Structure formats: C-alpha cells, structure tokens
Amino acid sequence: MSIVAGLLFTGADKEVDIDRLTECSSILNQHTGIFSEYRDAVKLALISEMALSDDAEQYIEDVKAVYQKLHKGHFVDNSYKILAAMLICDLGRQDDADAVIEQHNALMKQKKKDHPFLNDSEDISFVIHLALSDRPVDVILCDMEESMAYLKSCKVKAGSDTVQRLGEILALTDGDSWEIAIRSSGSTKCCSKKKDATEGGEVFFSLGMLIGMEEEPEYIVRAILDTYAYLKGNSIFDEKPEGKKQRLMFAELLVTD
Image (cartoon, rainbow, N blue to C red; front, side, top):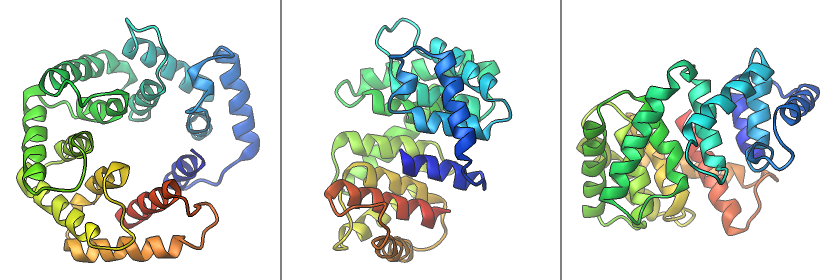
C-alpha cells in the first residue's frame, strides 16, 4: 500500500506532505468508526487521496455517500467497494453515482450468471471501470467475452479468473477487441519466455495496461525486464515471490507511463 500511495503522489506530481497526511488521518478518524473498514487496508490510499484533494472533509464524505449506495443491502464492509467509491469520486462522478452503480450491478449480475465461479470482490474495481465507460451492458460483456475467448485459444498460462480480469481490462479500451487481445497475448507470450517473468496472477492481467502502446511486444517486454532489473537494487522490494511480483508490476507501470 505504500507503493500505491507513492504512485498516487507521483501521478499527481506532488511531494508527500507527512503533516498533511497526519491531519487527514485525524479527519478520517472523526468521520469513521474505530473498527471501520476505512481505517483498515485502504487507509493509506484513502488519506493520500484526501491529502491530494482540495477539501479532505468533503472528499471523505463523498466517498462514504457513494460507498453506502454501492454497499446497499450488504452487512459486511468491503474494502474493494471503498476503493470503487474512491474511483467514482476521483473521476468526479459522485453526482451521478446512482447511474454508475446501476450499471455496475447489471454487469455483475450478468457476469455471475455467465461465470458463476469466477467472480469475487477483486472484480469490483474492474467492473466499476467498465460501468464508468457508459456503454451498453451487452456491448461491454460482448467485448469482454471475445477477448477472453481469444486469450483462451492462445492457451496462455493463467487461470480462468485471471483471464477474465484481463478480459475486463481489454473491454475498457477503444478499438477492435480481437486486435487488442492479440497484442496482449503477444506481450504475454514474450514474457513467458523470459526467466524473470512471473506467469499468472496480477502480473498477467496488468499487461492489459500495455495495449495502447504502438511498439512491438518484444520491445515492450524488453523494456519491462530492463526496468525490473533496475528496480532489483531498490530496497522497497524484497526477493520473496510476492516482492518479485510487485517489482514486475511496478516495472510495467513505469514502462506504460
């Protein structure tokens, strides 16, 4: 989560102000309960966004209001839905959150019908992105299914849930979903041939970020692995399997940017 917060400030071209973060943490405590999900896994990302906003108190109130609508009918708090509420507010869509959430619910309902064993809380952020695209539900799902079918035909080394998430990312893009899937599978195949590349999981579907690049997959993968090697000397990542995955994902983000 420190890496995520670092990316938020880097993306906004802002230096981290620890005093401001501490102030936002106090504001968060004033607006949420002691055992609230807002103070758990998402806290650092949340107070970072509060610190970057013009009005931290208004930001947390907007996020809470959207979250309550998104979470309506459920009793157990969900950190992924808090992140989804943050995304809606970050894009300035809190005033039409009802329409976005209605679209999200329609997408989730049909996805669960089509793939009952592949959907869980981790899909929420992807589906919110799809809902924010304001395209018809059937068009979005058709694009997603086409991409998934192509990726499966390529026999990529990833589980069905991971393929679905990449399909969700591909469905966000403009253009022909088949062509997009071909480019993404090309990058995946190149990565799978490299010694340091990790197959499957988050590293696999984060390759979807690279599809807007015009360079050939071989060039893109070489740039990712060069960056990955450079980051190896950074103490923020350890040499455990999870640390290696995070380093590769971070390399993908940097190359994309």
